[in-house]
Structures are given as structure tokens and as C-alpha cells.
Length: 427
Image (tube, rainbow, N blue to C red; front, top):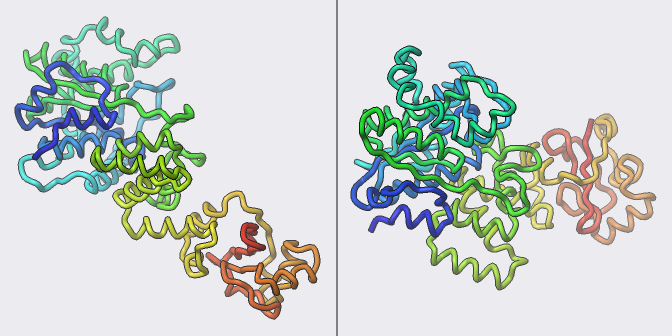
């Protein structure tokens, strides 16, 4: 049995605005609905995951999802939620970004399942041959300036000024909806709640220009419990592309979610049923310190965005700090992940010449890294089994440190006791 799309969004907390008649339409027939994606980067971020999941639920409810990548609108710039005009992109950059985003969308949506197969369209395809005079005659005359000025995305910018380019954006997006309604039988546009004004401009254009009927639906903008912006980490945006955000950092983003936030995340970003989520919440409440929800969410999303192998590697990297990692798992880390795992750990620089001719572990720990104040202290700690190099316990003081100990050809990880780590960078 296909799920009810609107009901699914409601219980997941993913429904903000819905135009009257939308739910009746969705319950009556298979509908083609679309969401627009901003092509200003060559990767989608976790912020886009809300809309990706919306399209996924839409498809699972038996409808046809369409992702519109804005090759044309990316050249204009959407003012919604922006305090300043953004830089416009050239065609070559846009095409590269669109190709990369398409690959990411194909990981979530089914593009080969019959009548409701997902589809990707690029609005540059219908805008490239449309000239300015035709546009203002065939589109501009149907939407009044008063109507456009009433939109929040415009009102919020009037005081500081906005260009005609950005002012006209809602007409361009409105025409997208009209074009897809006319040529692709699209009856529904979805998006974040900041897009409501642009979306209903499209439904209005369809009504005024063709006496047609179209519908609109939006999802809430996600806010974190502490007030900070969702989708951002301390180092910036969290991307779906592993070369921009490593699977380890991606996994950590979800794992570090607060208890309050993770209750929203498991509903919005996973496909678990209501019953499964409620059961997991009971388990979490019984032992919050085990972070059941965070671990489940981090596993589910990391596996779906990247792979099970990437998830396992991220878990292994995460466990290194807590004594469960091995020398082998340490050697497998990329330099970026190694530095991420040991971010904030004391770092010591040692010239490469100091270890090229081998050096005793005791001299290395005292004279070169100053981890121990005396050789006797270092020897005593080694005898007690309290020293490790690259997660391997140092068995005796005869060990020699050489370039073979280097991780990524430039680091050595030393450990004193259970929790005191030192990253030695060989320069």
C-alpha cells in the first residue's frame, strides 16, 4: 500500500504550508511535482537533504518526483533569505555543478521505475532561447508590481536596495512552474518555506495566463535547538561530496547532534517508520548516555549518502580516541581524518633529521617531544605499559623510532596513559 504523502510529512514534522486542494489532488491521482535546487556549488549539502527526502517520500507515495536544477536561475540569484546580492556564475561552472548534483540526486531517487520514475530538468533548456521582449510581454504583463512588492523576499531587501535582476527572480521561477505545467504536466511545486512567495507566483501565473490550476507545498526551515544554523559545522558547510566533507566528519556531524535536535533529525532524514522511531526513542530515554538515536541517525544517513564501508571507517576512526582503535586503523586514516580525529590534541614539531638515523624511544619522548620531563619517568611509564606509539603499546625501552613509524609520511601519534595524546609532526 502506497503511503499518504501529506500525512507522512505531517507526522515527520515536514509540512509548513499547503495550498487548499493539494491533498485532495494527491489522493486522487499520480501527480508530477518538482523542487528546485540551487546550482551555485558542485555539491549539495545536508541542508538540501530536507528537499531530497521530500522528493523521496513523494516518489514512495506513488507520485512522480522532478528535480529542477537552476541553470538559468543560477545566473540570476534568488534573493530569498539573502541579505546581499550574490555573485553570478558563468555557464561552464554552472554545467559542471549541475552534473555533480545530478550524480548525488541519483543516489536517492529511482530514475527507472516506470510511470513515476524520477526526472531531472534544467531550466536553462527553456530559457536559453527566450528573449527579453518575449518574456516581459508573455510573463511580465500577468504579474503586477504591487503583487511582487508584497513578497517577503522583496520587502526585506527594499530598505538596502535590490537589483532589478533579483527583483525579477520570482517571475523567472514563476515561469519555470508555468513551463513545466504546460509541457510536463507538473501540477505541484514544493520547497522550503522561504520559497512560498516564489512558488505561489507560479500558481498565479498559471491561473492568469492559462486559466489553469496548480498547487503548492512547503517544508519548514530547520533550526537547531541552540539557535545556530542547520547544516553548518565549525569548519563550515557539511557537504554530501566526500572530497568536501569527509565521511568521518559527516558521520561526526550527526553523531554530535543534541538530544533535542536528533528527535527531529530521525523523522526528517531517515526512512524509519513512526513505530520504529517511537521504539528507538524509548530505548534512548532509558539510557541517554548511550546516545542510541545519534548513533542510529549517523549510521543511516552516512551509509545512504556515502556507503557502508565509509560508515565503518568513520566508526573505526571515531573509536581511536577511546582506546578501541588499532595501529592498522590509524594507518588507514587520510591526513584530513587523522587531523580531525585529533583536533585539539597537543602537537609537537620534530625535524625529520632527528629520526632519519633512528632514535631511542626514551630520547624521543624526553629530549625531542618533551612528553616526559626525565628519562627515568619515561622508562617507568614504559615498564608499566603506559606508553603507545601509533596505538601500539611500547613493550620495552629498546624500541627505535624511525621514518617507518610515520603516518601519512609526516605524523607520529604518541600516547601517555589512557587519555593523553600527542601528535608529533615531523617537519
